[in-house]
Length: 164
Image 1: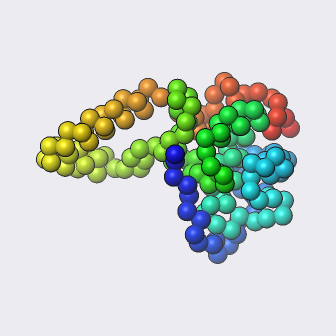
Image 2: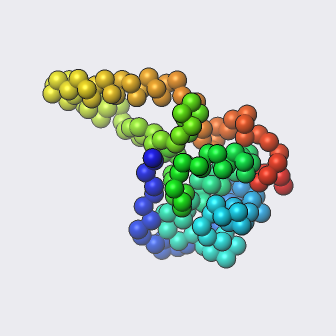
C-alpha cells in the first residue's frame, strides 16, 4: 500500500480549487462530480485547499480524471486504496500486471546516494538486500507506469467524467 501524504500543517494561504483544477487540466464540473460521486471527501465548490493532504487528494483524483479515466476505470484503479485518496501522483505508480499501486522506490534519490547504499550492502555482505534491490529494478524495468502525464488506451474514452 503506498504511503499517504501527511496533512499535518495548514497552509498559510489556502489554494482555490478552481485554480488547482485548471493547473492540472481538470474541468471544474468533473471536480464537482468527483465529490458528488463520493470519491473526493470535500466539496470543491465550497472548500479551499488548506493542507497537503487535501491538495494531494484533489490532484491525485483530478489527474486520473483529466487523463481520461471514466468512472468504471476509476473504480477499478482505486479499489485497493484507502479513502481519503491523499496520494502524491508523482510518488506512486500503477502496476498493470498486478493491478496494484506502489510507491516508486528510491524516487529522487541521487545516483551517488544509491551507489553508497549498494556499497554498504556489499561491505556488510548483505546478499538479501542486494538481491531484493535487483529484483525491484527488474520488476520496475518491465512495468508500465500509469501517471497523470502518461495515460493509457484504457483511459481514452469520451464517456463519464471527461464528457465535457
